[in-house]
Amino acid sequence: MQSSRLSDFAEQHHVVGLTDATLENLDNGSYELGRAEAFLRFQKRINNEMLTHQVITNNPYTHWFSNAELNDAQVKYFIIQFSVFSNQFLVAQLQKMLNADTIEEMRASKEILANELGVLFNDKKHPSSAGGISGSGDRDLGGLEGSIEGGRFHFRAAHFELLVRMAGKLGLDFRLLGKRGRGKPSTLFFCDELIRLYGSEDYQTSTAASYAVENWASAGFWDQLVSGLNRYKSSHHMEKLPLTFFSWHSQLEANHAHHTQQELESYYFNFNVDEDAFIRIGNEMLDGVYAFWSGLDRDRDRLH
Image 1 (tube, rainbow, N blue to C red):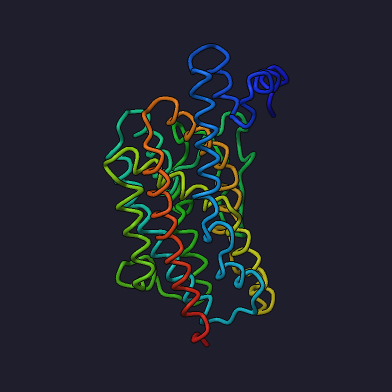
Image 2 (image 1 turned 30 degrees about the horizontal axis):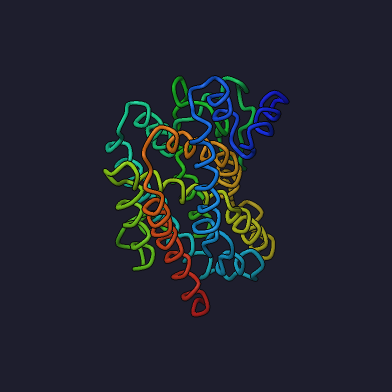
């Protein structure tokens, strides 16, 4: 929650809407107020020209999924395609880490990659399992934030393994999961765009793609997937079907939204930003995301 001092500062200088970290830097003179005014104009452009993308505001597939009477074939097909994305994201995240411009950026990317692979966040503010989540039969997955430094590693905490356990309950063989060869063209297009943009050697490209991805991920589609899977679980009497992969990400991504905004503001205040290119790249990334969901939407009616 923003302090009254920072709220008063923001009101007085007409910079309401900036994060606390940026307001502190403005207050102590590290950032210039003129740059803050320029950023707020840029943020308005992002809101109007990028964050209105259909994959964020109105995804037909996830809207359908949340309310559908899903059949076995539809759920299995969805899980297989999502598993390809989940595994290929590791490639994109590794490339993003390797292409980092600074040691701090490399470490931030390493945090995400290691957590994906099963290293729990060591949340010093909430030790033990506080802020974590446990699914039926799953280990505690640690906090929703913190650092991997000093964190515990568990094979079973790897995000992909959470999905594998769910797939196993559906009768899907491990060999069907996560492999590029199992991906449909629309799924592979999305994965390749992640590698090209999110994992780009160009810092502005990777930053714009990362901002786009994080805003998509925190826009609520995880909750829609959880809703649909809970309906399926109930209607098919599969009380032991573990949904931890999806429920965990629902909480994790919602927690990322504020950090994503801080990162954008820090980037803008410390680099010369080509605003048109940033918005164009962000939309290219979101087009890749939308292609994935559109492919699933096209295929769903033929699955019985």
